[in-house]
Length: 202
Image (tube, rainbow, N blue to C red):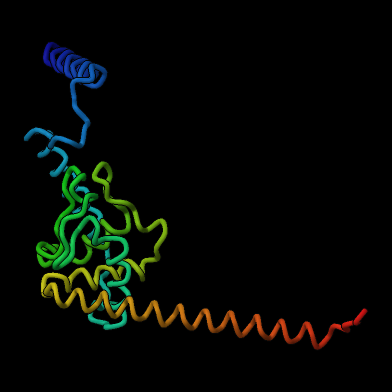
């Protein structure tokens, strides 16, 4: 009975101390400074174990499909490079302001399992600045991002720049086609209008 009472008292005291800490404002939530060692260890250990327990059932598709990698580059260049970097790209103001810092994927992607990249990209990671892209992107698009991300460590700055130039040219071609299509439609509507309208000269 005394042991049980001691345990209860200890838990009550610990809970009380936790509440005092929470409501005192002692903990600095500013992103200007890194968390102290204990808090950093708690957050990192919690994150790693949480992800590991949730990726066991994920089935990884074939990530060597060229079209998938190409699509993944388009998404990565637009959504991910600003925080996670790219070969030859300087650190952005956004990435400098993140705390904890986002992993520099051109260096570390080779050591991260595809399932882990997929899960983190789809679900995001709370309190890190990592958004849940699964709210706006299908699993297929997220796997495409994973496929490209796994290629990053083998890419040079020139390689990445060439991919960017190809993407830019492709967007210009698509834009020109869209403009041509719109003009064609407008001309047809204009022609049809005059063909079916009787004009009276006053």
